[in-house]
Amino acid sequence: MFPGRPPARRAPAPALRRALLLLQVLLLLRAPAGLLGDRTRRVSLEVIPGQTDLSQTLLHVRAVGANSTIHYVWSSLGPPAVLFVATDTPHSVLTVNWSCLLSPEPEGGLAVLPAQSVRFSSALVFLRLFEFDSTNSSEVKDGSPGKPYPPYQLADFSWNDVNSTLDPTTLSATFQGRPTKDPFGAFTNGSLAFKVCAFSGSGHPAQLPRLLHTADTSQLEVVLSGAVPRGNHSLFGLEVATPVFNSECPQLKEQESVDDEYSPAVFQLDQLLWHSPPKGFLQWRPVAFSQRQPTWKTALPCQVSPPGPTLTGLLSQSPIVRAFFGPSFNFCTFNLTFGDSTGPTYEDQYYLSWSALLGIGIPPVDSFSPLVLGIMAVVLGAPGLLLIGGGLSLLLLRHRRYSEYEPIS
Image 1: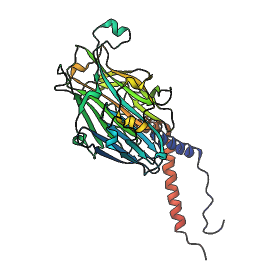
Image 2: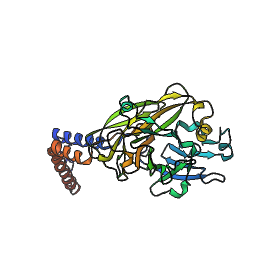
Image 3: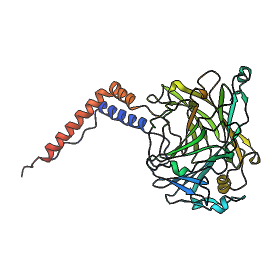
Image 4: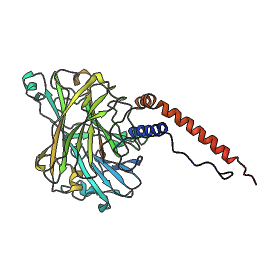
């Protein structure tokens, strides 16, 4: 051995290697899935005002990453709708020609430029608010939510000025509306609201159902509050449409998620998946809530029907959808129904809320919570972790010894 030269490094002991591997696995389990390549994004909310009417506005959420941008354009022109577009550049921009957008032929009135940077685009349109009388047990047994009342056409609602609810700090805004014609006064003290929230990173909201979000997602919360039901046990629902350019509707998929900290053990996720990569998705837990401070005890079941094709002419037109995609497309529609004939009802508090995540890429998947990871580390890896601590201390001592060594001259 030459003077002053440290001995050759030895390979880590098997127990130390196992502990290091355990730590790597635990870190991978903790990392959220569903990112489009950026763990964080620069997110901005902008209200694009119309020409004269304050209710004719667009809410533009722009999420900029290192090599991509996601645009969410929320609109209350016609039925409430959201356009979501992913581009492969951080410099893409939204352009709006209001004169064209508000005309009978809005094609070309809204675009994301440069056009060649667009890698995925789709939209959701919220068409009707359903109400069912679930007191007739025979109809409920047949699989129907109950006898339907005439639905509320959301294209006939009037909406607030979203500027008044815009909060750049929480990256949120709310569209709140009520029917323009309400002969029975059901919405005299009530409203239907679409609460939009964007995220610059990943995490769980404080309020149930605590869906895991990433920087590639935007959350929608639909809230029906204060409206007087037309029956003694009314169930409510939504009709939702998405444009398609062939006969293939988005895929409805159920998935079990490990979510030990935020809900009991294994919990279900429902997902609507668009097929074009990078895939778009709508993700939600099959529950709604009947109180402003939601708990699992007040949760209502949420049923969803499989998406099916519907001709464009049968639906209320959304100006932003026609402006972006042009006139040549059809729709696939699906229905969401909240509650059943036996559990908690909307009438308990005159309140109903349902939340979903809209995003681009792979949907987020919940991982084990820090509590469970800590238990796993203690139970499975305590000896290895002790070895890691001892090994690091030994390496530091050796480094100090060799750094202070003076060779013999």
